[in-house]
Amino acid sequence: ITPLAEAYRGMFDIGAAVNARTLATSGDLLKTHYNSLTAENDMKFERLHPEPGVYTFETADSIARFASENGMRMRGHTLVWHNQAPEWVFQNEAGQAIGQEELLKRMEEHINAVAGRYRGQVYCWDVVNEVIEDKAEEWLRRSKWLDIAGEGFIAKAFAYAHAADPDAQLFYNDYNECDPVKRDKIVRLLRSLKEQDVPLHGMGMQGHWSLYGPSMDDIRQAIESYAALDLRLHVTELDLSVFAHDDRRTDLTEPTAEMLELQAERYEAVFALFREYRDAIDSVTFWGAADDYTWLHDFPVRGRRNWPLVFDAAHRPKASFYRITEF
Ligand code: G3I
Image (cartoon, rainbow, N blue to C red; front, side, top):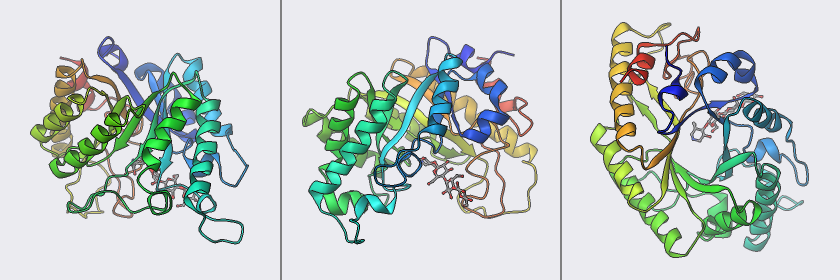
């Protein structure tokens, strides 16, 4: 069989999201098939900076070390996000909300410490994650960052990241990125950042898709729209859930043959499209290494398993694997 990264050499990197457990259980698979890593959770604010002045870099360091020892590149995920940001960031010692100036100072200090530490190891950062609102009629997502610091925190985050690591490629990263309404809002944000001369280099299309959507046409349109802004594209968190949106079944202990076939067809189509846009796409990262561990187990339905990746739970290549490596 052809290793994944080998099949795509000269086109784009093939990455996987990892955590301490998958590094231990999937080391061989990672070394064989992937040439890029992203920390699934361990470079997020609450993991690296759980209390004021306290930085906990151990697990993130071990992931970065694994990457460099095995000649893999490392994507940084993520500096500023509404989720997994600890409460203390937005409060003073008395538990009252802080003001704009203080929050921006804390954001700058965090970005400096984190992007500074991984300078030379992490070659790109998801600087700002998921700030566009999903609801069609609303613009930015309500969050403490937005409420306290105002819309300007987005541009500032990029400026701070650029100052901390001038060589890093800086990305905006979001999901539902192929939905035409959300896509247009993302384009509006990216365009406005570029007009303000913000150091922004790429768009991260998360790629949390399923066997049923988005349509290939919407994926193509999204790629075209982001690439037209003269930004590099990374697919940052790819997985194809086997369940449709309204499917709440919890009884399956294995994927059905039909699911696996549909998934193979869809992976084939998706990667054919990525190859078509190889001049714009530099990296495709799966949000996990194999089906034994995925964030989609128990999400959004508790007690339900999922099989969204191209290696099965025993790390054997699935039909999907063959369809994306033999072309
Ligand atoms: O580590 C604790 C553990 O100590 C505790 O016992 C357990 C009980 O719930 O929770 C554990 O933390 C969980 C953590 O994953 C590690 O497994 C959190 O509850 C859980 O919320 C967290 O989920 C992560 C999620 O981001 C947070 O929103 C997922 O693993 C991670 O895959 C997911 O990744 C995000 C990207 O960063 C951004 N894009 C969407 C993507 C999927 O949601």
